[in-house]
Image 1 (cartoon, rainbow, N blue to C red):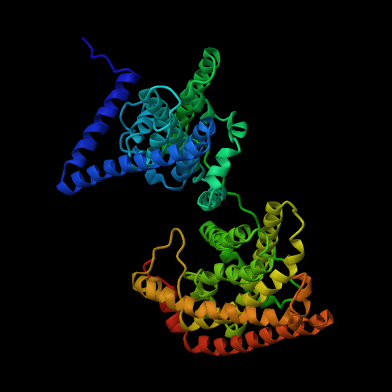
Image 2: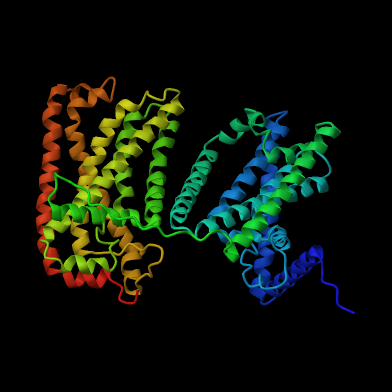
Length: 555
């Protein structure tokens, strides 16, 4: 008599039993893990109780806000779980299933086991603890066990969504172009989380949002279906429809996640075709041929690695966010302060790349230094390439910054008159930063690590330590401030275009701006030309040290 093959539900039970035994074995291996397990549950209950009391206080201060609070809490937890799950695959418990795919298992039960096992992962419990405490502390709603059951459904839906998106992103990683897009999307997700956090911690922001009845905007989302089931404030037919839609959505997520799991780990997606496109030399009449090639090569280095672009984007947005929130806290009265803060913070976002202008070359620096090109021309080409990228990105960021501030103030075009002056200050600081970068690139070279490149162990402690970073900032920040000082002197005559009523001591005929602005830029550019010549002679003497610091022979 042949043995009966287990069905899908039985295979799912076997997977969950295996996962439970692994949990118990891992948690009881040592006293340290037992203590860690106990502390994890203690933190869960502490957060649930603390946030529950806080939620009860918010609702008590806003009578009739229970419905808005539940809708907003469900949506906030779902959004946070999905976003953080996309940023870090470590959150996805049971994510590495490659070792069991050779077994006769269906992809649906494997994906279902991934979702259910994730409900008991420590990170997922920490996500759910605020909502558990909040909804259990409310006076309105169904029984506590029913509330907890709906929270489990919400957490499962969020975890399934995060897993599905992660599997889709992993399948995209098999294609070069899509992999680059996915890297930038992940960077934007991290930036979005940062802005949500900064917005939520501002004084009274949460209570103002709850009082504004967010249910009018959230009622069509799946999280509102769970909130309606939790509150029991609709008729039986409406609640049954919401429950049916929720069940259909969970089934759809299960099917889609299973298909993506199969495509990701078995490679059933179409293999990418490698297209060969002949490169056409572009004319740059304003540059000699050798400089044009060097500039094009240096610019390619910045766009070759998507991680570099993602890092650049994150640094820029993270540093520019304080300017927006400072303007909000000042009630719209700090426009000029935002101009000067922009001129300080934007150049700091370029400091990591300006410090080592050869940090992205890798082994290509060897071929570059073997060429007969004069060293000052190599440094000059780096100034043109990196400086141009810095200035273009700064112009875009300054425009977007003041556009966003204008939209927040209710007048989208009301702040754009400050864009030219903020950009002039920022450009002056960028030029001074490039002067520092020319010196440090020759005498203190540093390799900028990117994906697929092994870090140099000898350079890791020398270039990445806290003391080294502090010394860099002590050099970079004063250089940026000196650039801002040049810019402030250049913009002195035109301060009336930025301030409606400037002090009388600062009054100067705006016509002097045609003298001060070109003079300031001319002085900074003359200083940069001198630094290029000095650094070029230093590069001729320090080529062996530069190669030893930037080239990893074991790569």
